[in-house]
Image 1 (cartoon, one colour):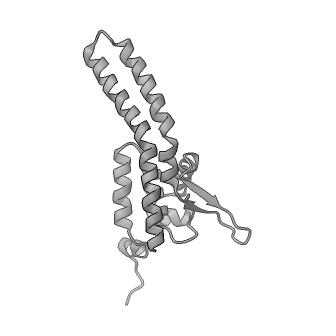
Image 2 (spheres, rainbow, N blue to C red):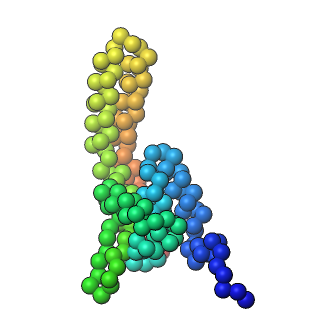
Image 3 (cartoon, rainbow, N blue to C red):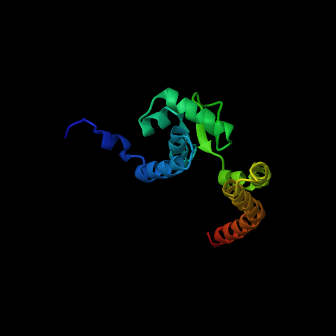
Length: 167
């Protein structure tokens, strides 16, 4: 038996690589930066204690600089956190628990603010019915999201609590 490792063997220890890459591609398609998306999905699949920057680079097949920029971005948007331990030399990264829940909950005021700003766009184009109507519909959508998001979050909390009681 030889000791040569193929690229396939190199990632075989990481479960869910294909699914993580596909999920990263989906959120990239809707505007999330590509490398932060890949790092985030790798961290979702990380073992307890997260990954070091080196482990992320190895898993994703990218440079330390690419991981560094992605980690900085994900920390800025409060999706991941650094874990420093006195007994370990290297910093590790992990997904912040309930991160999506927090992001969605905190976006309700943003939806209302967007609706107000889009109303102003529509008002400025009152003579152009197409532009006005487009802005009006978009503003209505964001107001709908602002109204519904707290209800959706409440429903999620109920579903999550029921699931935890069953586990």
